[in-house]
Image (cartoon, rainbow, N blue to C red; front, side, top):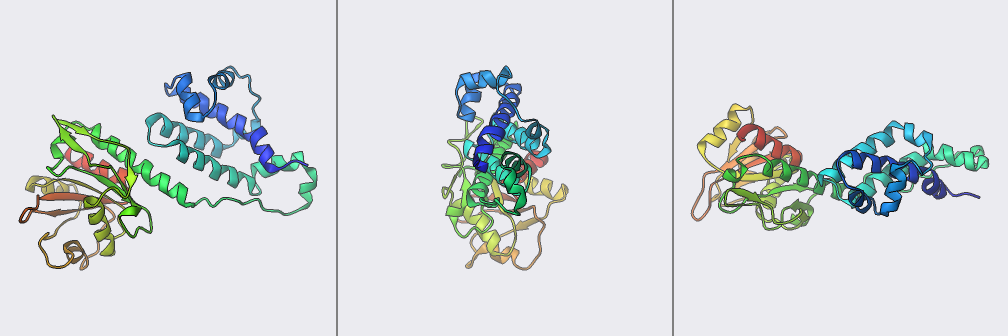
Length: 300
């Protein structure tokens, strides 16, 4: 008797890890860094590198495995993907391959009796909360890197600081919105990010994003930058809709400004200030990475 989990451990995992270790090494990670990223020993990494680990050809040849290995390697090497997300993404593929697919075939080879049955081995939901949460955090990390790596972004940061936020698909409150704790500030001409993104740490940008969604606009990300007429004009010249709202309006000013019109997935929202309120421009987009890219393409 052989469980499919044994096939995963004995046939899939050594091959997958060796492929991933090789890709990470190609991206410049040291043997020690690869070991830490994969949660294995340096001696294991050395064995992978020298071909001392037996690899299953069917796994090596599978295009989905190859695509996942490259995507995870890119994410881990760049710092966009956490080890948790890498694990979840690998788990999702494993469960897919177990469900009447590659791993099921290898399992039948090990247990020929299984070929007589039409059985499913679907265990994990590919749309799990953990996976979605990690994807949102990864998107915010990518977006922040896009902004902070761009020359001149510090000059776009308002006095209250900038933040980049993205929410879960069914967000109801700020606890469902990921952003940078403490915001991004201009410190001596350099955009400074205090820590990694977290959920529930933004009230300002998260509140704007949630109000936009309350208006029926299906945006899931927002970034705030400083306001002036030229900034708004440049967005308009680039083809993005610009919408002004009054921060002193008696009811939700964003909902009031947006509810009467339809909007593209990516657009600009702004207010020109009020009593004790700094003028701010907001870029709304389907995800944080897109919001950051729009800012960079138009203004930097």
